[in-house]
Length: 599
Image (cartoon, rainbow, N blue to C red; front, side):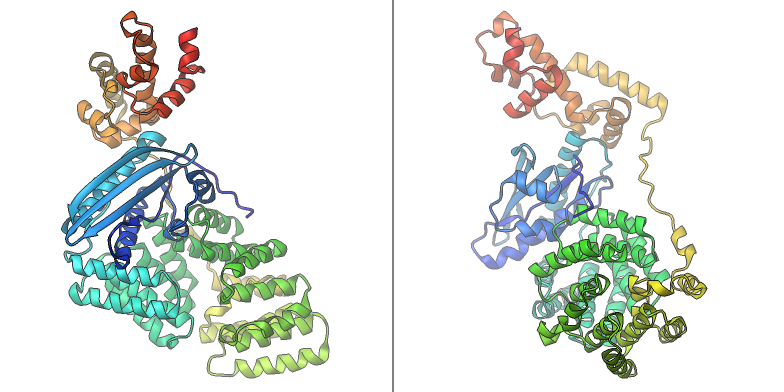
């Protein structure tokens, strides 16, 4: 991968919670708890949360924490388990430092299922607090989980629908639709179930299991209804972006909706992928790579992300790298239709014409589109200057273009004319595609295969029509951290904090948290987090552990403590972990505790 994933402290992966219930059928519930926490943490700006696809890659696998952290590019892992017995549930959760491979926080909750949303919120808030204390400032809302239904039964059915849909095959997706519909029968206002059902319809339409108009029509209806209930669902705006591109051929609408989805949730990986794709087809390579980098950092193991990466490499004319990434995708899923499509384009650009001509012969017939097979052969024969076969293939392609569903064949006719430098023919096909509203025209217009016609003034003219420049003036999130205290209040609070440390020594309490310290100061935890980061350049743990180390240094040489072990003195000074104590002491002094005592 040529886009590096940089590790930072503000990164976490929530691994699938283990199902400790007696029945395997309850696994949908443990999966749902996991996804709920992922979605809750993803709401926090400044926190990078690995998406479900990459986290669930490790389900049932016994892989060391450092290896998982390295693969996902995260500093922290959350593990847990769920046990459901009747109406009672027990949830456990542990935070693990992925680099050092040690647990630094754990908790257990015994509740009834009626309080599922409250416990998800409590878990998510506690996790966010512990991460902020270790890494630095980010703001945390008072609640991260808002109940999306009053019915536990509807919620269970929604979770079952999610579990089935995430298997991404026609049969399971159809079963997911049944669960979503049952959930909506119980609670007609469960917007998330509507978005899930809309996604299922669009998926089945895109792979031609159901008619195009039926699938996308139901998707549009359900998405709009979901937004009328909750207008802050990133998944709904992502669906609108797809609808705009695939049913309206409107780049403007697609870009606006995708940008809206990303602004609502920067961790929504599908929207990051789609935004990267939209920038790529508009020729904005830098922006495309920026969003691709975000997608890779959120979901590095997703085949969909890797496909977009290969596609963007192709559009950037890095054909060998693109081919390498596309082949890696096919090793995992040989039935991936979009990957096969882009791979044949790579073969053509690399001059491997014989491979391109025969490429579709060895694939299962159910994933081969006649127009793509005919179009690829026509391009290959034309580029290798085999006039006889080029003419035969072009004639066959033209017949397909005149059919009821000729969009794909039309775009190959455009590619063929462009690749051969037949400018007038190429732009005539562009006119035809714009009149018919062909969504595939947007994908193919900037293709490297038509480089021979890109110097024609008409190319720029049509480019402006298809990809209007003013679209890109949409404001982006700045990400700037605002001051949470004015100068006078900040100075006053710093003095109050220092006095509290010196007189009451709260750092000696091993259970001290950022929130409890903020309460003692009479300010919000967000304000204290900001103050420590902005004025002192420290996170909560670094700040508090400094004073604990100083307490140890003062206590360790006292005659009355000569009978105590190093670790027992450390515990009296507020530490509750040998690993944390040794690490902090070495960072503060450059010495180990034993070296310090010998000095």
